[in-house]
Image (cartoon, rainbow, N blue to C red; front, side):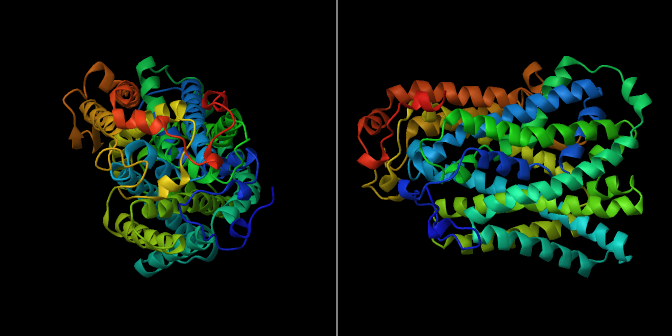
Length: 497
């Protein structure tokens, strides 16, 4: 089906969070492959791989297995949750109103928005480092405060242009830019592979199984889990007839292929550069390993890869901001978002002494409520056949998703309980001596082996599955029939097959 004027390459997308009508749906599942491929060809995968060796004591073979399980597995989950987008035609957190209630959804939406801002700040800061290093390598222009601010503004300007135009332009750029920056990355990767100390790599001792389990959690939290609440944002223009299994496969392979390559390379490099995992400026740390002639394509690839990831995050953050109840056009929401990101970039580059310490700490803490949301939302997705588009946009007492006082208490209780339990097993800090938060069970077998995120997700799903049966308002909503055009012709279970 042809794209509407609202979703054409180069035109400004005027739709906000309202569901996409069936007549305007178009595209194929392969679009999700390019979406997640583009989002994951940035250099942030290298320090993640280095951390597996430097901090977890894994050898290269173990690191490769961990990379496969963590990246493919977490993005398979992203693909599964994106089925809600093509089913309901709305962004993930807008669809979440049907699960948590129009008021209860505010909590998960706020956490999601904060998560998006965190990723954008990391991307923006790292890209500014890349651009500063590129100017130095190509023109001999040294870094200073004014130039740093200019580099931040350049990256933010590029992000604003792409994200502001919207869905169709993002999808088009993702595909073709992936070819360009993917090729540049392959050239750089090939050269970096020649600098690896293969003797140290092949003689590295075998790490423990528990370290591998922790590693899978680190990779999942640092890659797919951060995107789990955004997949529906990009699948909502797809026709309902697109098989759910294809969305899962496209998402898993689209993200898994570049991530496994980059994480494995980071693990290899850490054999000779153990400080790479904790570098305050990861771009420069890798750049010092390259000759000048190779630095330039590397830095261009780094900047481009981060841009491809960032415009997706900003686009989703704009939709999430509107879902929070801020009544602005989508383009203005994107603009407000990058202003906050710019302030965060200034802090990280010019004020903060440690870059990746706060990053990992931030991810660790936000992963708990995000995992809890994933557990609740996944159960609802399996059991739900359809979404009522009109009710999703109605935030008053007349809404089908008002439930009791605007809150679906079955979902809220499950979400809150899973967060509390998850935090019991969580420890977050920038170092062993700088611990921001430590739960009373953080040093138990589950906490020490990094399984708190699994407990959080499973508990949220189990509690919600139980309470959903007991909550009369949820049963009443589930039995009501939405408008005819919103009813799916096939059972939900068939979509997930």
